[in-house]
Image 1 (cartoon, rainbow, N blue to C red):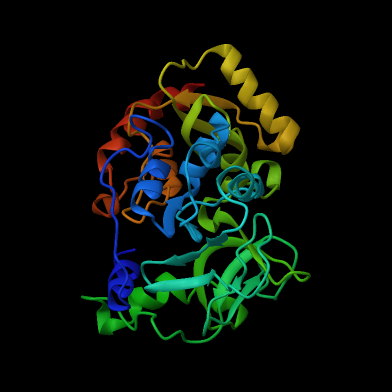
Image 2: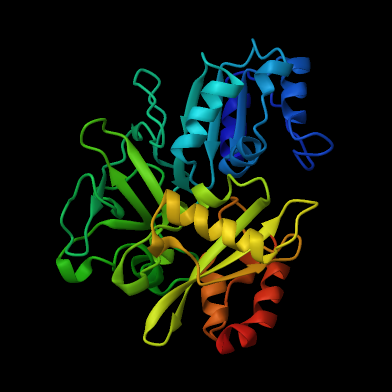
Length: 343
């Protein structure tokens, strides 16, 4: 986001940054600032929008948002209901811009196309100069089904090597280009699970493909679970992983609760019932745990880190803790892994 801010300054915009808890002392404090300072573009996260939606907050009913022209959302995946909430309760005549890219490419694979329609749950299309497709496990292009995001051609802002890499290529190729190598495909595989819709041209993101859950062989994107659970008023944040168990894989959920709530058997039942009704029985977690404050690990670009937790639960080490915004969050999972091995 630093690059976005610097680019904005370069075209003469004024940047307004808020340092602190966006929901303190009032969950819609941000909109008070928008009214006061006549902010025209608001950058936010799916977690914040889902939180407001869970509270049934109505910013438009309380504040004058006439200056607001656009909301840009990134980091985690926003549910279709989140899109609809923005237009229903924040502003009906703004441009909602959901984007997805990567720090490593210093850009976006998909995002805003202002001349096209915004569809709930979809990024509008491929970013300029990004030859994005979705590949199945055989390396074939698929539409209207969940598959791996790939980029089939060089992009202007992609890195060309890693520092301290052997001959500047070994680790680089292993990180991005080896996944479909056995299918004779020399493409950038980013590690996101997506659906490219043939009718709209839009793209739905379902989370990290290396974190895809496969209970009984059924593929489930973690965002399918987050988009439902994080709309509950009791839930501030959540993380799900797949744990190898008795020859299969079971879903384990960790939840961060909003102030004033406890993880009772009644709340666990509500979580499971909500997932069963809004997704499927396959999405229902076998185990649910409460995390301490700041107990969900995130990267510096505000993406959840399921893989680190999965490794810890399975007794593996996490090498690059310095890439996490809150590496101390992993201590909780180190402590709980013994309990998980017995349940």
